Length: 364
Image 1: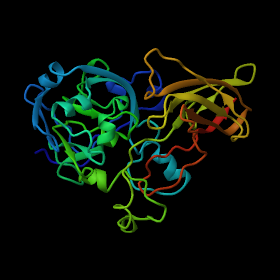
Image 2: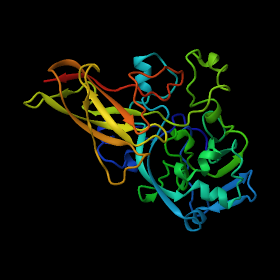
Image 3: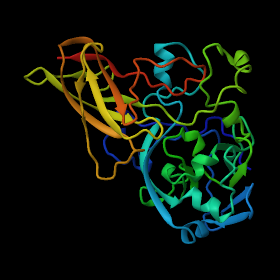
C-alpha cells in the first residue's frame, strides 16, 4: 500500500478560470485528497458489492461499462470545505485546509446507476434504515488506513437522486486525480461521499465507519470550540450530506481595480449552486451598497444544465467610484432556499454559504 505523502495533492483554480466555462475541464477541476493519488489499471480493477444483498458481486470496469445501462448526469461536485477561508476570516479561526471559492467543479458524469448495481446484487429495497457504504482500500489516508463514505439506501435506490458509479467525466475516462477508473458521484451531496478509486460497495445497517464519515465533515455545534470539546459531539452530530445554496462573485476579484463604463456601471459574474436536490438555481442578486438594494442578475442558460448543476450568472450594476468597495451576491434555488448574509460558525469550517463577496475593490 502506498504511504501517505507529507502534502497530499490539494489545489483549486482561481475564480476567473473556474467560471470561464459551464463544464469544468479536468485540468481546472479542484483536487482534494487525504492520500497519495494511485494509478490503477482499469483492465484489472474490480469493485466488490456485498453486505445485505442476496448475491455478492465482483464487477470489473468492463462489466460496469458493458453489462449495465449507462446514464449521464450533469452536476456540481464540491468539497464541504469550499469557502472555508471566508468563515475563518469573517467569523473566527477554524480547523482545515484554507479553501477559497474554487473547491467546486461542474461536470458531465457517465456510468451505471448505483440503483441498477444494487438491484443486480439483490438488495432488499424495504431496508429503509440501511446505508450504502463506499470504500477505497487502495491507499492509506492521513487519518485512517482506507477512505470511505456512505449515503442512505433510500437515496441510493431513488431514481430521482441519479447516483452514479461513474466511469467518465466530460466524455473521457476519469483521470487518475479524479478517481480513475471508477468513482461514486452523489449529486447535491458533499464531495466527501463521492468516493474515488472505488473498490467496494456495501449495504449495511450503519453508516460508513471510516474516520472521514464519523469524525470529519460535520457541522459541529458552536460549543465545540476545539478538538477536545469536539469529542463530545462527533457521535451526536450527523455527517454532512446535502450541501447548502451558495454563490460567489468570481469577477471582479477581491483587491482588484475595475473601471466603470460611461454610465457608471460594471459587469459582475460568478457561479451559484442549489441546495441538495432543491435545484435548479432560479435567481441570483447582486448588491453594491452593503445589501440595502439588490439587482437581479441574468442566470445564463445552458442546454445541458440540470437541477444538480451550478448556474453561471452575469449582472451589470451601478457602483460608486472609490476604494475598498464591496460587491455582494446571493442565490435562491427552486426549493426557496436563499443564501444568508452569514452562516453559523463550526470548528471544521464546512458548509459556509454566507453572501458571496468581492472586497477591497478600487473602482475608477
